[in-house]
Image (cartoon, rainbow, N blue to C red; front, side, top):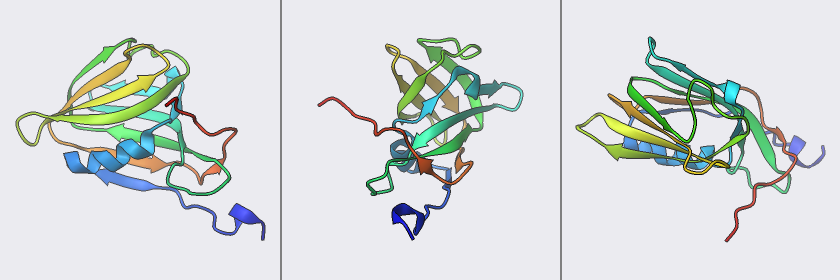
Length: 150
């Protein structure tokens, strides 16, 4: 057949249960684009869910790809936002990276940092790393490739 249609990428479904597991998830989240209404925090369920369009850095093709994706963070014991109100997030955010800071094991802080708004980040305290990253559909052609100034 034609080009990238022959080897259509499969949707990702990844679970992170340790701080080491967060590193590859962070790489996959880089350049993901989301809207404010796609951020949901449920304090009662102790879960934060983000829906976004993930840039598929893992595919080494000439055709840039994006996939509709969701990240769910569970076991949350505290949540702080800087640069925006988590109950009313701004439109047009892009994820820079996800980082961890150890506390008394297995607890840690997760830092979700965003581009496009100065110093915007979420500081998420979890009793244990409990993340699920899941593509909601197969990757599709992206309009453009993210560029990072050197």
